[in-house]
Image: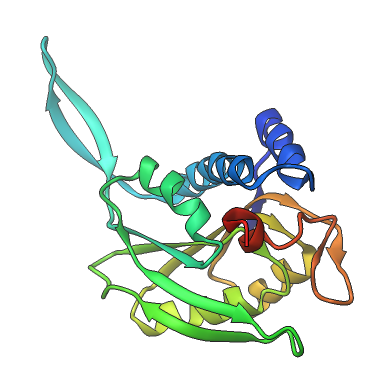
Length: 205
């Protein structure tokens, strides 16, 4: 399953995010704000458990998150979405996975992994701004599954049909949430119309 998050504010912020004239500090802010919308939507999948809460007047039957959550940003660009994610779930654990793309072959290369061992019923939410070829995301999910995680969600800002199709082929059990699905990849495997290199724009490098 994949879901495009539809909201007027998402559309508005995406327009500013795409603009090549948007400076790095504003780009970081916009990316974080968009990430909050996408992660919020992804959290609809979370199970809850009933709890009794004593209000000033009486006991209320409430619900709270019923499974441990771990956010796993894909370095380096995924770090730009992390603050928004942990703002929504401050108790979540965080792991890190470093993936880069070989610009000659467009194949993913893993260069760093620090993923905590899963607890019972843990849910991993992978965060990465761009879902392009899907190669890095698929490799990241494979790594996370190898750690023992059974339930994994992918949250991104911009995706394309090729990346979604590849992820669904490789990991049909992983649901994808994205702010927008763009038209296609170009010959250099960049998303069109896209926004350029998200990591470079987030970190002004």
